[in-house]
Length: 190
Image (cartoon, rainbow, N blue to C red; front, side):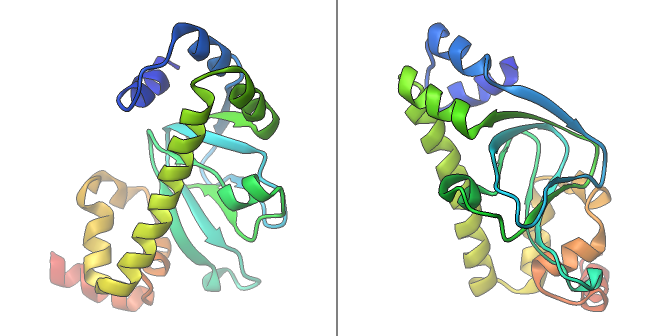
C-alpha cells in the first residue's frame, strides 16, 4: 500500500499516525476481467484506489449493444459511483473491470471515521472528490468541444497500451459514435 501513500504524498504530506489509521481501513479487493464491481440500483459503499487494472463506468440497457460507456478509470486513480456514495442512494450505473483488477477500498463508514479522527481525512475526501469531479468535467467538455476523432486520440494519448485492453465497442460508445464510424476514425489515424 506504500504506492497509495506515495501517490497521495505527491500532493500533501501525511503523518505516520494518520497513514496508519487510514491504511488500516483499506481492504484489498481482487477482481477477474469482466466482473461487475457495482450493479445498477446498488448503493455504492466504497471509494477505491486502482492498484492495477481498468474499470469502466456505464449505463446498462436491456439490449447490451445499447449500453452507454461514459468513463474509464485506470491504475493509480480513484474509482467510485461517487454520487451514490455521497447521497447513499442506488446507483444509476455500473462499474465493471475490463482486465484483472486489484483495488484498495475504504467503506463509507470507515471513511467517516477517518474524517473524524485524522487531520488527513478531509484531504483524502477532497482529493477523491476533486479527481472524480475532474473526470466528469473533462468528459462533459470533451463531448461539447471535441470531435469524435479528438476524443479517441485523447483517450489513448497518455496510455496507448490501453487500446489492447478496452474493447472497441466500449470505446465507440465512450466517444459517441457507432462501431463503424470508429473503424473509419482508426483507419484515418493509422
